[in-house]
Amino acid sequence: MGGTIENLKDQNLPKHIAIIMDGNGRWAKQKGKLRVFGHENGVKTVRDTVQNCVKLGLEYLTLYTFSTENWNRPKLEVDILMRLLVSSLKKELKTFLENNIKLNTIGNIESLPARAYKELNEVMEKTKDNTGMILTLALSYGAREEIKNAVQQISVKVKNNIISPENIDETIINNHLYTYNLPDVDLLIRTSGEHRISNFLLWQIAYAELYFIDVFWPDFSENHLVEAIKNYQNRERRFGKTSEQLN
Image (tube, rainbow, N blue to C red; front, top):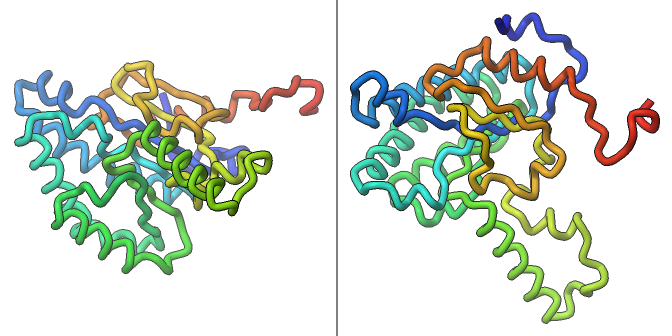
């Protein structure tokens, strides 16, 4: 199965891949380990996937790192996830700089613990001038909250006569989302065998190709990434048009 990044055709590559990294806990449970063991190994998969996407020449990679709903998990697990975030950012800064990666984030990051918030902002500041792949971490992120916030911002501007209601279009909505500086998603990958979106980038995946794989995140490899992209390349993206119109 799969292959290597080098085997992929240069044409028809996705510009923006988003990944729902699911299955760390179940992977650990399968092995008779604590959930933290799965999260630790999931971090290694993140590192490998980021480097593979750099090799691919991908422009945008967005990872669903921590959702608004994840705050409801046991406090110990949340604390461990936050510590892993801080340690990972410290370790990966060198990799980001060497590979010209710009770190970006979406979500309510003000709700993160102070140490995680500080480390995240420091790494974003140190990579802000990088011109290669933009790596976006969705942290304390929920698509419904994002859309709600956009509606509230636009409503205030309408009330203050900054925007006319009849002028509200997709561009104005886009400009008020967390992802205002990112293109729409081309390919959405979800690991673990689950077939749902889980409140992730609901607006931005309107025309994305969806790819679900029955592999827990810690086992997601270069071969699996290649398979997902090959699958994407074999699909016809019509955006509401007919095949004849595209041709």
